[in-house]
Length: 347
Ligand code: GLY
Image (cartoon, rainbow, N blue to C red; front, side):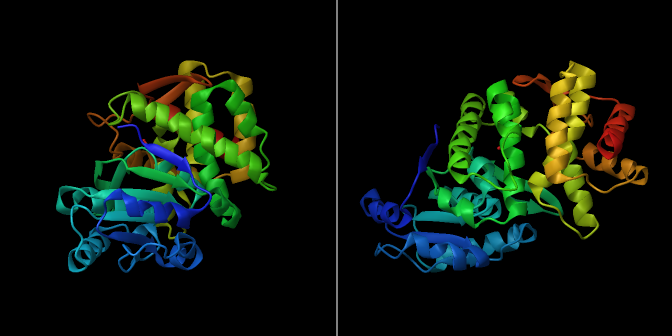
């Protein structure tokens, strides 16, 4: 299904128009922080609104307990198959809310209104929904695209620098998968003094690239694996940071993962050295280097071995032969992966 992603300037007017959608009730699902900062923008213009569903705001709460709370709320507030959920928040809200909607009474409509850059360019688009389970991220879930995604770019101006950088890492990933023009434009963007007009246009292009890939391979049997570029190593850093009790944002870990996977792309697929250097320089300048030593290599490798994208216990990568030249289902020797860690620490 082609997903409708719309730029929406006035969210409360858009909500008002839902009155004609044939829905019997509309539930807003959001988290404690977003409720305070962003919920007022949806207004109260529709008589269809039920009370809001408010969940805790961190990824640690993207679990069965929170999911059960959402299902219970829907049930006790009379939700039917003709009800709608508006998921207002970051990826945690759109992942969990999408899964709750996809499964309640075998599926009801939902609209994603992402409030972070990461959710706008990635989580809210493409139909991946789910929750964490038994300590594993996104272990339980289904593919189910939102009926609509509303992108309200003024939210971008409210983001702190760390969240802006986190989302931007996914945009840079999309640019690397796209073409040299997009890649060069992304390396030229000043994250310390963001030009929001320009960022808005780049967000639109980034979403369009993701939609093109998802339209070709919605359930990740082939090309969609390209969107995992930087994530095989990045997820290992993310989990390590959680274990150290100093969690780092997803996109920041993906930035580190991209440095390692660009190195491996150079070794395996001849990714051009000068482009590797330029990209790595930008990433290090904006994201720094993950603090780790060779004592962590075995742990990181073990974590990568448990990645759910692997087949037959072999670590699965996406490599690039150049900007826009994608090779999925790639492998690397353990020694090469350790060299990539060395490269990140010292290269
Ligand atoms: N976040 C990667 C994907 O949606 O496939």
